[in-house]
Picture 1: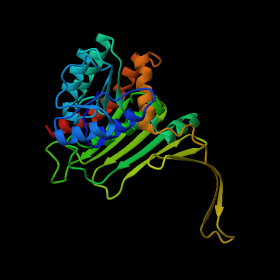
Picture 2: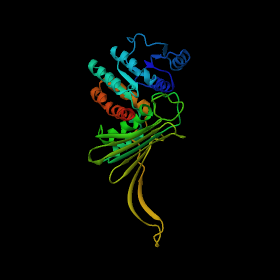
Picture 3: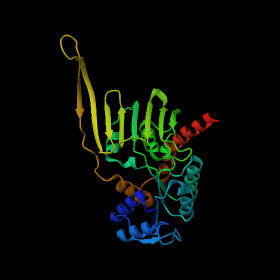
Picture 4: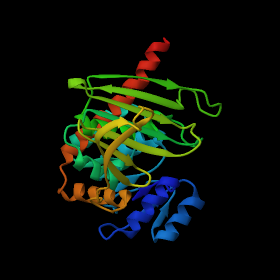
Length: 316
């Protein structure tokens, strides 16, 4: 069952319908035109409401973030494996409650932190040896349909990646949020800057914005002896190793640098959404550790919540 036939839901519908490992049985959407159109296109049954879940094996939630909490509880209470789009819910308390419910009932769940399955990210992480510094930029033009702000919509992806690269939850979280777009709802930030500090002086700097004039999805991972640059949009990786630098001419004018550039072959070419679905099927089949999957969701959600709560506390 797929809940939600909007922009993200339609992508899930296509991938599930094309999969050799799953069948798209039911699409749930309160909008008859959207729900029926998607159901007819992908050979599923349309329902305006969830209804009985006895005839489905698992559920994907791609509804609005505000609806995740109530929908996820219904699914888990029916003992159905769950893939919920990011974030799990719009707040850490709700997220923790859903993860706890999954554990209590012994039902596998995962969150749609899609960049985990980006071929460029998978390749870059395989090349990392001893990461010290991570920077990430995720900027987009304004999207009024996103009501929760960039923390839960954009920042969560890159803090999830940074946490997995640098070792989980940071020792210290700092940053700033910017609120200024006239169409944003109260409390929904338009810009988020996060600095994550880890033991040994390791640092991540994550930037998210929904007031950019073009879409940027980039990440740099710094080892002591190399720089790994990742373009998450184009899904490519470039490795730089500095060799030497010297003046550009005999009089010392200008600067010349010698750098070895490597273009590694990607370890996979599978579409991230398809790879995520395969991971979900593995979770259902027991080939993926359900407890590890649950625990992996918490660092990113805690980081975003801490940043948002820090600003709220400062405003008091």
